[in-house]
Length: 397
Image (cartoon, rainbow, N blue to C red; front, top):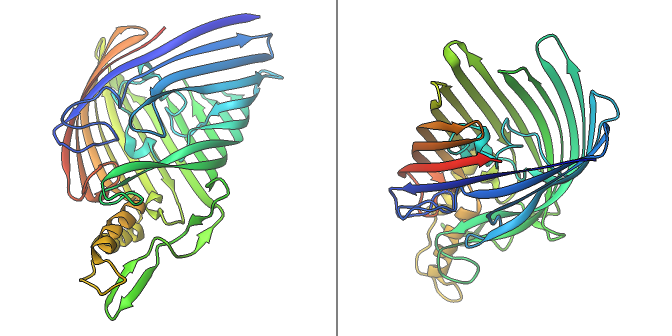
């Protein structure tokens, strides 16, 4: 039996020029929480056909904004019956975007932060399940077709500006969600170029609890009404189709171009999660330096953005008992936030400097603007502009 171990780490600092939180942690006070991560991996090879992989990491929690959690990222058995077939069973990282499988290992890509406009779209990136892949070797490109299916327990984060549950104050909360995901992904690559396209079907439930499918408008007087979170149609599960496509290719003069697009659809109260995201990045290797620029955009469906505007702008005048106009108006802010819509773009310029073959320093300036709303911003997010400076050190060992 062959046993090898490895590790990876990123110590990242990010600071914006705005007082509100962006991407959960970034504000004008600065934070190490957004990009820092530490992990280790153990690979066992029993023989030419059988192996196993374990990977654990320490990173900011996916179900709390105030703590870090140690989690098991990978834990699977692999079987290669012949050279061109690979079967894996256990906890797997899904083959979604080009860097999803290595997103925790900052030393494997030059960008200081993978564009969240695209890399945040999938409901989850890890499942307990089964993956089967077949590889074809051609003269130049290798082709791999991978099918997977699995389950996961995760959390969806929400932020309320006016009211959270019964407490009249802003804050975030995390709803537990059970995920079942299946997909088919085709990847072709050579030493310099990679192309990938995938279709995925996600089923989401809330542990047996029905999910709100809509926020109906309730009329309480002529021309007066409110969007009622406590009523409306409910469903036992949500079916979420996800489509992904990406390409990374090298041009003359060591110029690398990467473009990715992802789209998903959610038919529920949180219909703002139905959105698309895309980015284009251009980088050039100059000795140990790799300067780059990218532009990324994310946008929810027009219907979701219009629903957000209608709910967010809805107010009621003073009403007779038993109605509390103040509480109703605060509830409209909460209802609008639960739609979770996105409308923003980011332009960034940065560089990485490779200290050694397995370590690099990255620096980046990014400018983000929101349109109607962006649920990445923990505040009234319409028409916001912010600048984020990021500095990080990543290594593998």
